[in-house]
Image 1 (tube, rainbow, N blue to C red):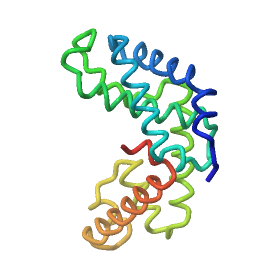
Image 2 (cartoon, rainbow, N blue to C red):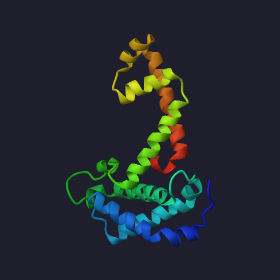
Image 3 (cartoon, rainbow, N blue to C red):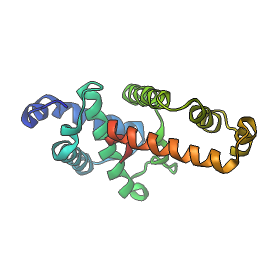
Length: 178
């Protein structure tokens, strides 16, 4: 964990936070007014100074981490107003899972690498079960037949792997799972 002085972080990143909010508003075609943008910025700073900054582990650049906090604040705020603030009829909230910005791609790559690392510490059987179901689209019954075990055993292993992944990823990327 790194120690950061909140005043220094605010001075160094306040313009960046404003730009992130503007970028996200354009990216998701959300007609955010000045009051909304300021609310999002304030909420992002509240999140940072009430624990998110202390949880930053230095696994990525601080700017990338701050972007993820701002994005989380943006999503939270936008969800409150989706009916009144969307420019078009399509749901901008649904498009928030898109990973087309540089920061989103970098963060997604970090999460992917961490997932692979966590899976690498599991037994070959658990790795196979998870990858066969999650990546390759096999059913639990098909995996059970391939391994010569029961479907309920596959289900138990799959639940266990998902639980471990969720716990470990939440520790490393807390702002991604709000």
